[in-house]
Image (cartoon, rainbow, N blue to C red; front, side):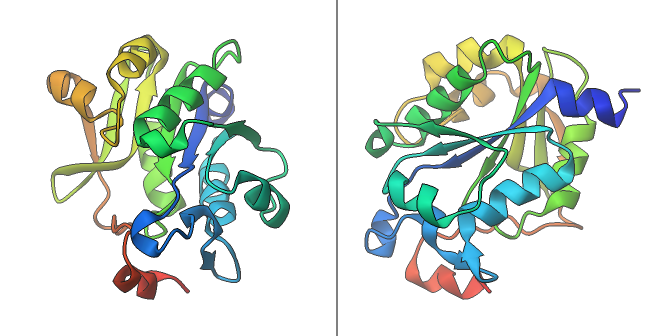
Length: 202
């Protein structure tokens, strides 16, 4: 069994927070307010609280403003100049930023899912075994986030990650290898995508 210190060293948190919030009138999701602070700050804190010793945060839209407003001390901030191309570009940038760090896996979270807290992240993190691991949170049996990618998969994911599909194509092709970790009892996987969704924020 892998102890917590090994997990902190081996698994990096990777937060995708670059989007421009097109359906929110051009308000970047990273800058939405949740519990009095920018949403990106909350999401990075979730990864750290769950046990990710290293957290890389991919920024894009209004990144200078995000850096100025959010307290992200201790995180590695990764600029994605191609953020407007979609989530795939942010995933590629984030995985590239982990090269050479010694991380054996990346635990990927999305900035716009505040209903997913440390409990769900900890469950997925705890299912890490080695560089070949593919682990996903599941909600009533349906795959969701966060997702853990062992380093052996990074190159393949980066090749497939285009547009807003992220790792979807790669995961579909490797569905038999994915370990699902049920999290519906500890998290709600809603997204903050539209004006109506803003009611989920506190």
